[in-house]
Length: 99
Image (cartoon, rainbow, N blue to C red):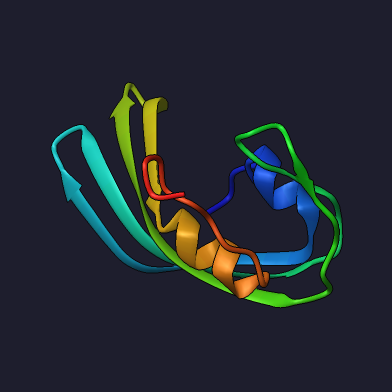
C-alpha cells in the first residue's frame, strides 16, 4: 500500500500488508487488506498501559477508506477489529459497564 505503517504497527517486526480488494468511486477509494506481523515490541494501549512483547504472530483484516483530491490523500479512515487483535496476543478486554 506504499504508506508508512501507523504507530501501533511499529510494535511489530516484519509487518506486511496485502490489499485484497480496491474499490474506487469518484474521489473515494476503499481498500480491504490483510496485515500480518510478529509482535516483538512494546504496544501502547488506549488506557495508557503497555503490552509487553509476546513474540506471537498476528493476522488482522481491515478496511481503509481514502479521500483523494488532486492526487493527494486528504482523508484516511481505518477500520479493524481491535478486540480480535488483542485476543491474538493473549489479552482480554473489559467493555465499559461489564467489569
